[in-house]
Length: 258
Image (cartoon, rainbow, N blue to C red; front, side, top):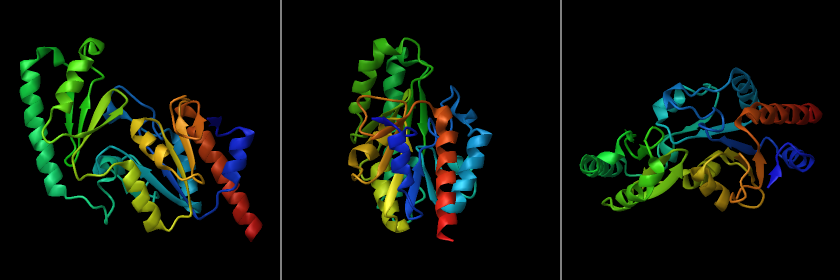
């Protein structure tokens, strides 16, 4: 991995054009991770640079949050908002919403029964997002000692979920639903983009990094030797710096074409 604002990283960014789709995760990327997800917010400087980028280019925010929650946290100038890992916000997403909602309700019933029988799961939070389900573990006591039991419980759900780890949570994706990698592929075709810059920070974003074509620029927030991303940003607080560089570069390119 290379630092995205290093000399090599900047050279790669300078090759981007207005035909690029700039796709960004929300939690841990645009906004810092916080102990109470309802308090997550984009820093004012990052909001300012994000608005500027939207004036130059096609921008998408793809998040695990529900679409109505996400839309209340992101500037209205962002062209594409995809919530629930891409299951909301894409008109042509091949998702049977009613079936996914029914599966998530069945999972909730199964998990409530399992947790009632295992008092040591105290502190866990189940977040029903309609077409997907999230299991939050941030406030669990002694999580390490029961992690195997929790993993087994989730894997035993019927029907079996696609489980994607996140920061202190498990995302449960129903059969027939999509995730960020599938959603981004659909969005790229819809937007007619020839290139993509994608920035994310967790295992859901790794799905995109792993499938990205060689010409895409993929950036992980937080350096990781296990990541399939080609570049990294050391900390979420540098997101404003990355957006500023993009704005300066795209603005210069537009000026030179005039």
